[in-house]
Length: 42
Image 1: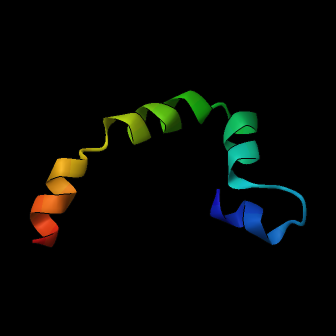
Image 2 (image 1 turned 120 degrees about the horizontal axis):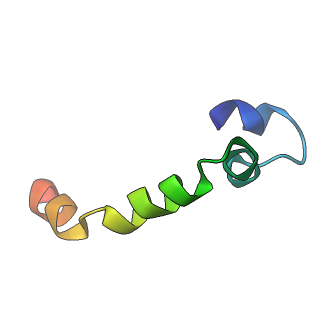
């Protein structure tokens, strides 16, 4: 997805959709534990 930033007009989200990993990406973001991040930061 990072390589998509090199191509003008193509975003990482567009590449995720084209590659078929968009749903997995959304699930990974949804499963992210914000409380854990706060605990590690303190």
